[in-house]
Image (tube, rainbow, N blue to C red; front, side):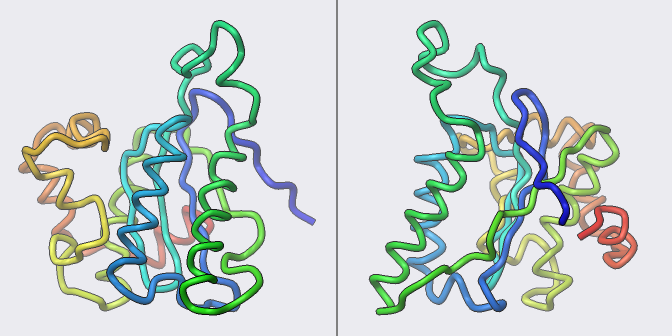
Length: 198
């Protein structure tokens, strides 16, 4: 049995999971909105978010777990009582509880042990981000990344204030024009999935 990778402070990760038995985890607009609200409540405490996409039956996030010294309560260890993965588990549990109540269902909603892969190179970061934003295109929900409402693409190109690490992301591509150019290129999704080992 493959050992689950731990989440380490100060490291980048590609996190993803899907509904159990590939079931829908988002059925209507309010589901997407609530999941993102919970993500902000739980995950912003422990990690910075660089990209995300919420699909009908799965999701992807690109995050960096904060350094220990950036966490609230570090001086008295208040912020370190729970390991990083626990914040993500709390998010998924809270969403599952609300989803089950709303749709009168019971049991697990997500596959056990959300998947996580540490990212250790700049090229890997860029490929994961492009893969995340083009996931709706790959699954034929839309023709361009900018047309899908439940990803961070529009937030990245917006001038509005956001908690997303927008400036860092654009910086990986040098400027906004180059960021858009790389998103508009045809991606070899199967090759990227093999490289990312998805």
